[in-house]
Image (cartoon, rainbow, N blue to C red; front, side):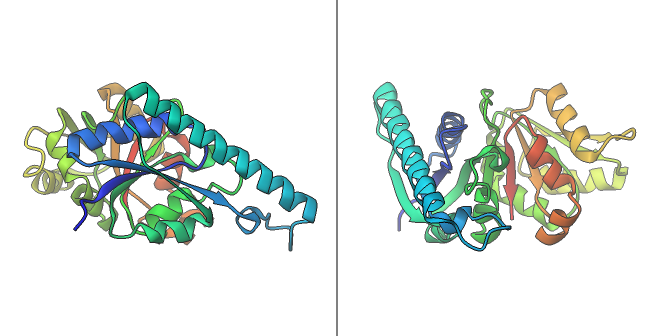
Length: 268
C-alpha cells in the first residue's frame, strides 16, 4: 500500500511557491512525500451565474488563458526542481477540480492550497472541493505568507465535531510543535478544562487560556491572538453550521478563510 502523500493543489501561480514551501516543511515534519496537481478547468467551471452558455469567443479566450496558466505552473515547478535539486511530481488534469479531488481520495494525508478568493475565476472552489466534497484535511496558505508552518500552532478551541476532527487530523503536527497555544474565546473554565482533557495527551506542552472578545468577532480575536503568540498555523473547525448556512450568513470559518494572514489547518 502506498504511503499517503501531501498534495499541493495549485490553482494558479498566485501563492504557489508559498504552498509548496509550506507542504515541504510539513512533509519533513511528518515524513511524507509531496506531490503537486493542477486542474486546467473547462468553460463549464468558469461560466458566470448570469450566463446560460459562453460564446465561442469567450470559450476560446478562457481556454487560452487556462493553457497559459498551466504552462506558467509547469515552468515554476521546473524552476523549483532546478533550484532545490529535486523534482516534484506534477499531475495536470483537464476538467473540474471537484471531480479531480475525488480521484485522490484515500491517497493523500492532507491537501495544501492557496486562499481560494485570491485565485482566478474558475479556481475559487478549490477549498470546498478538497475539504467538503472530497473530505481531505486542508492547510490553506495565504499568498505572501513566509513564516513556515507547524512549529508554533494556535488552536481555537470550541467543543464541536469539526474541531475535534481537525485535532485528530493534525495530531502529528500538534505533537511535534515547539509551541501550542489553546485559546477559548468567550467561554468558561469548564470549556478550557475539557480542551486540556482532549488536547493534553497529544501536545503535552500546550498552554491554555480563556480570551475575552471585547466586542470583536471571534475570527478577529483568533487572528490577533495568533499575531501576539507568533503562531505559524491556526487549527480550527470548519463550517460547523454547515456549508449552506455559512454561505447565507458568513460565520467564523468564512471570515477566517477570507481574512487570515497565516495558514489555516482545517478538517471537514
